[in-house]
Structures are given as C-alpha cells and as structure tokens.
Length: 172
Image 1 (cartoon, rainbow, N blue to C red):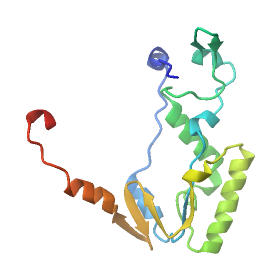
Image 2 (image 1 turned 90 degrees about the horizontal axis):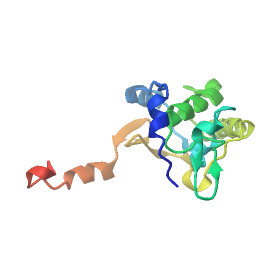
Image 3 (image 1 turned 45 degrees about the vertical axis):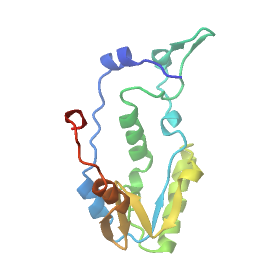
Image 4 (image 1 turned 120 degrees about the vertical axis):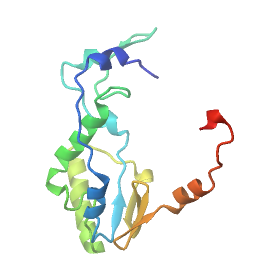
C-alpha cells in the first residue's frame, strides 16, 4: 500500500537532523577490532505517532478509513525522527561503543548485552537474519574495516573499473 503524503509533507515543519561527518565516524573506529551490525525490524514502524496526531496519517480505502499508530512510510520527518529515537535510547553509549569501540571479544559481548538491554527496555526489535555478530571485518558506509584499517570495498572498486564509458549523449 502506498499513501500519497505530499500534501501533509508540504505543510510539515522539516526536522533538520545533523548527519555525522563520515570522517568523524571513521576516526571513532580507530581501535575497534570486533564488530556487530544490528538491523531493527521495520524500524520506522517501531516509532509511535504522537498521541492526537493519528488522524494526520489517515488513509481512506473502499473498505474503511485507517489511521497509523506508528510512523508510516513516506512522511517527511520519518528518517530524522528515527535517528533522534536511536540517539535518545543509546545516549549513554554513543561515541563509546555504539558505532564502534570494542577492542576485545569479551568487551564486545558486554557491549552487546547492554545494547540488547536498551532495545528490550524500549521495546525495539531486531531482524536477526539481517544482523551480524562479533565479526573481525565489516562493511561500513561503502568501505571495509578490519584490524583498525579502513579499506575500499573491492566490489565497489570493481564496479567502477568495469563501468562502460558512455557512447551516446543521453548516457551521460
């Protein structure tokens, strides 16, 4: 189902969320040797709409009218709201080990326990099949990270090397 929220998005005050600089994220990875990546199950759908704002998400079908209780796909502030939620629930761990900073497996296991406890306390659920745990090498923002080294992702380099040069003006 796809709902056209353009009219609502046009009158919504945009929540400008500061995206972290990629260079700062890479610096944080300096001593990290053990990595896990978590993917929240239907992330936006775990963010509750503010009480009283449900009618703004109304969708009328031939069967009935429906209102979302959680953030629907297509709302302009959904990404910023989700990032704000993650920063709020992980506030104590940001720049310590959420994003990076497990140097040993034992330390990493303790960090994961804390992260899982925060997720549990906030009723946020991960999609296990999209997660990876205690990896020595991980893809991060189009790069590979291993042993404190930042490397280009070979698959991305290969895609650029094999890119066919344009032969017609529209291909430019």
